[in-house]
Length: 362
Image (spheres, rainbow, N blue to C red):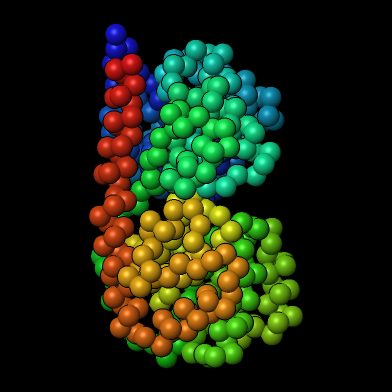
């Protein structure tokens, strides 16, 4: 027999922070989507870590938001009380901390459905143990944003029929862009300054490129604990003239707008938000073949897929695009159309509505 109509029940989208990041962005977009049909709260575990751009989305869409404060124990107690008082029926989360807290405290408070998330195709071994336990023992279904991760982790003991893939979405705020030809081509990389993004492969590729082509400037946009090491590398390798680091700017879109090529050299990804953002700005891409990048990029259609760490091939593909303006424009338009056809907010919303409706039939 179907359970009570879930449109009358209460949902929490549980996120670690509201700082700039793929999981945080998708959590806000999920709250926005579900808010159209269900009674939803966006709950932020580290309530003092907030980016203004997410607050704008929250306020514009009247999303009820709860920010937890205090030490860990106080926040756990506050979360427990919130679930009890609001009689929460469903918890969605995306990252390990909120996956574990949501499932465990949700069990205590008799929450009916748990949908934790997996965001990368490869997990840290310690995280993998906990995520496997969450998926196999605690979750209703684990939501992956990428197919490569689902298939890979299924071979490592993750129960496949307790998982589902719902891809990230992208909201379009601009039309296709036809860029003018410039004296210097702008290459852009954007992301957190962490090991996963393999920034030193990007920098080494740019250094190789400089030996064969001097008609470009490379912008590295982001923030993180590797900043000092990146700056040291740039200085030691005498690349300051053509490599520019920009730390967490307020207007990221302006960098996508001025760019001509997008570069990503990650060691692993899920479904990359920054690649999707670059596609929405009609950019050709040179990226490593990790995660679901091969679902976003088609070789010689909207960019190039390269092996991890292959600095020479990355440099060669960048050189080719710098020297072929018309190809860059064609690739960029193909990027935009591919993203719009396959990863719209409407598709994302329908997939989550269907997931919830299917639970009613159990």
